[in-house]
Image (cartoon, rainbow, N blue to C red; front, side, top):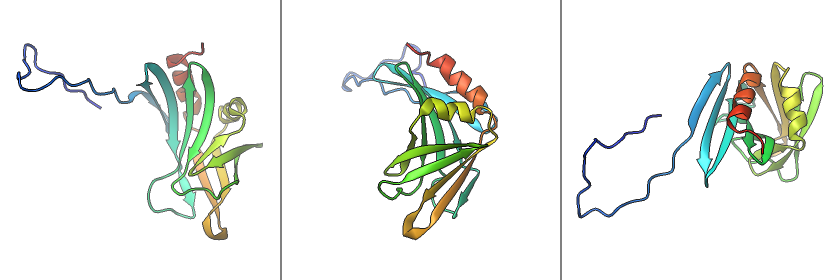
Length: 165
């Protein structure tokens, strides 16, 4: 992701009005196994997140691959979410299995959120994969499998880049 700087000494034509600087996009903190860590500035506050795409999706979906994301803000920690391609049926729960630990995620549209973020992070850290099971459309079930290779290093990078207040 590159940013082009104006040439040194270049002048803006007098007829063009000044424009506000565009908002900076995300900047990558690093790739860690199957995870990517990044941060961005939103309304003057730094938000850090780590994410991975599902390694397998059943039934196969056309379109975007589901994402598993952990977000850190100075005043809000360990927000764990899954973003799916299609909306979840209203009022359903997504169950995420990591080893012997089962985690419940509540749904809103095409997103599912961990009810207990700190517990989800604690389960993800030593795990090798997370398997998300949810009711799907038309009385089917969906099963998305996420690799946790590199999760701990990516998580530590975002915690360092966005310390708690």
